[in-house]
Length: 51
Image (tube, rainbow, N blue to C red; front, side, top):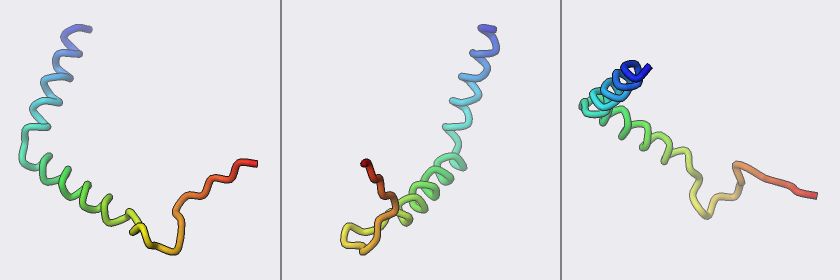
């Protein structure tokens, strides 16, 4: 089991060091930022009503 965890850790480190991961992360953050409404928007995306 210890070897399996070591393999997972090393695989994760190798994947996060690649340029494709960095590009995917940046694109994902840019898309997520574009979905956030501006502060002066006339609508709410989530409304929580507690009665």
